[in-house]
Length: 172
Image (cartoon, rainbow, N blue to C red):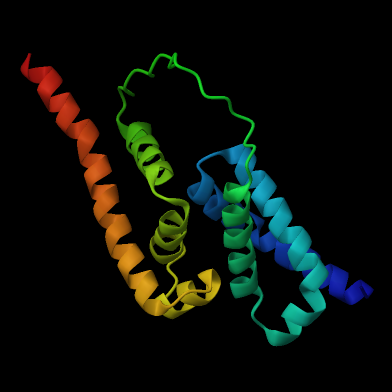
């Protein structure tokens, strides 16, 4: 790669790495895994940089690559975790209330199926259009619409569960 292209890539990567990492975190729910997904995305983007830069679709290519890396990672058999019968103690609620909302949302997002989570993150967090999301996920616009609707409905349901549990605990 030419020196100018290297400096162009470095400038782009430096400006977008934070946004890519945040999107990756919303997809996978783990900052360490988000770092890995971001790194994978940037490596693939670097390899394709001359072609992608000429087409002037760098952001779309980076998003699509990030989502594909996330979905591909979810298909791998070994995830480094072992099932156990004993569950760890659950954390106590945050008395400040500020972080608990974010944690509740992150937990609810993690419970969505991977593809549905990708649609919700791209549509609601990255603010992509239906057409852009469909291109990033290589699916139809109708699929994006239905997955967005179902994903948001499921998120609402999952986010209401802790509220209902808190209300019933307070009734005792």
